[in-house]
Picture (cartoon, helix red, strand yellow):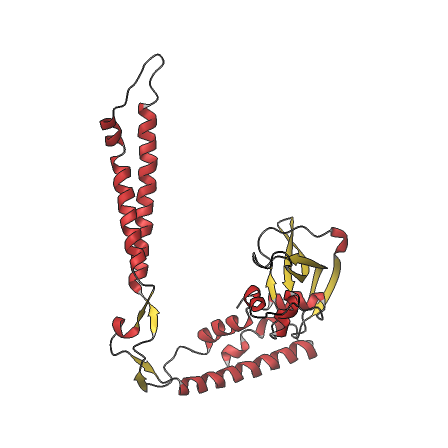
Length: 285
C-alpha cells in the first residue's frame, strides 16, 4: 500500500503525513527522478559509528520538501524530511536524496538505515551459499494446492514472440525508409515518378512485418499471466515445510551468534584482521 492509498482510506481532514502515521507506517526511501539541488552551504560533515563498530563519514544536508501525491491530493501534497548525501564518483559530485517521515532520527542514522536496507536479502544470499538453505531437509510431501495461481510459461513464450516481431518490424522500417529514399533522390535535373505499384513493392516487407507484429501482440494479450497449478502440473506435490522451517531457524540462530561474536571481537579487541575474517569465520563453522 502506498502513501496515496493510505491517505485515501482516512476520510478525516488531517494532513496526508499525519494520516499515514495514524496507520503506524513510517517511510524511508530513495528519491528518484529529477530533484532540485540542495544549497551547498547546508551540508555538514557527519560521523556515524554503526552497531558493528565501523565509523562512517558523510557530508549531509537535512531539509524538508513538499511532494504531490496524486491528482486528488496534488493541491495539498505531503511534506517529508529529505536527507541529502554528497556522493563523489570519478571526480563528479552527485547529490543523493533520501526521503523519510521519521523526524526523530539523526541524519547519519537515516543514511545508515537506508544503506542497510538489503541486510535480509544479503543474509539469504550468504546462507544459500554456506548454510545449504535449498537442501531437502525432509522428503515428506503433501499434495500441493491445484487452485494456486502460478506464472504461466506460455506468457513468457508469447512475450518472446512479440520481441522478435517488433525487432523484425523495426528492421523493415529501416529497410523501407532506405529504399524509398533511394528512389526519391534522383540525380540533378532528373525527375522520378513512383507509381502505387512500385510503392507497394518497396513497402511489402514493412506491411507484412506490421501485420505479424499486430498478430503476435493480440496473441500475447490473450494469454493469461497466471494459471492454476493443477492445469500446468497436475498432481504436483510440495515438500513438508515444518521441518525445513525449524532447520532454518537453527541456521539463522547459529549465524546470529557467529555474527555477534565477530562484532564483539571487532569492537572490543585490537585484532587487526577482524574485518577480514569475520566474513569467512561463520562459513568454516
